[in-house]
Length: 366
Image (cartoon, rainbow, N blue to C red; front, side, top):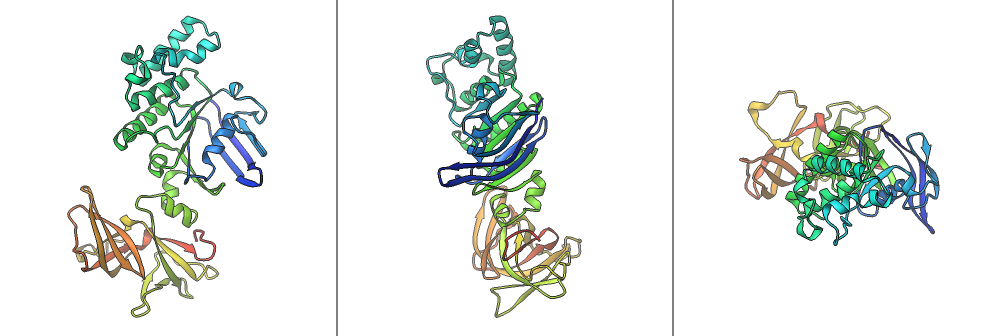
């Protein structure tokens, strides 16, 4: 198996700078997700790895080989696109083996590769059908089979599930994860869906405006986001941000927007004396819960506040509640049976041990 190394990669389209100094490494057998909003450069980066886009400056290594000038067909990669790009007049079998047929691969080798991939993807009954006779999920499996049959060193996925409905996306996400566990090949997967990135990847590269914002394991990206952009992008609903000011001792913060009744909260971890005083307090919705006196003192670093309820959204498994706190509207994730009334002022427990503090000027994690 093979690793992927990207060093100081830049890409310009005329005067427009699309990628700005990307440094990234996918270790052998690792599953890397490139995630970010539309236009952040993630698909362009994948195309440059595949050799479909030229490099303005920087280096790309597949294994120990510099591939900047290597044509796509010689990079030992396989790519699955957002569109299935299947030949409509060919059967599933012919679609999968078309590349091998073009390379004049012996028929017995083709048959063995086809049997292996069809069994792996559980599409043996579909081999004689044409694409028009397949569901969206089946077509995506065939597109994946066309990539797998090559047994490449590196797999590249460009938003392969975005054309599927929500239920099928969840099913195919699980299939892709199981497939990677079985095959174990180095994989780079582009998506704008942060849930896909969290559930599939060994490590996540979060991109924004052509720059790499954070590259780490999913748990760290979620719990300790590098900056406000990452904190707001990763997570659904996203992290809540409250404008605050830290005292000189670095042990308490006061929420802004509560001038009539200033709200001061104790920090679970003291801040350094030279740290920023103006901060944003970041709290995930699941770290805001209904206050229960019987659970006080359980060591969760809790702070008790009162806030009026603005909107209540039952989802079945849980209840999402919008509240006003610190002059801003925040979202809390309550248990399914907890459904306060709109307009009611309720007591909340804030898990300050899980809170993130961001410098108000630089918007980076403190």
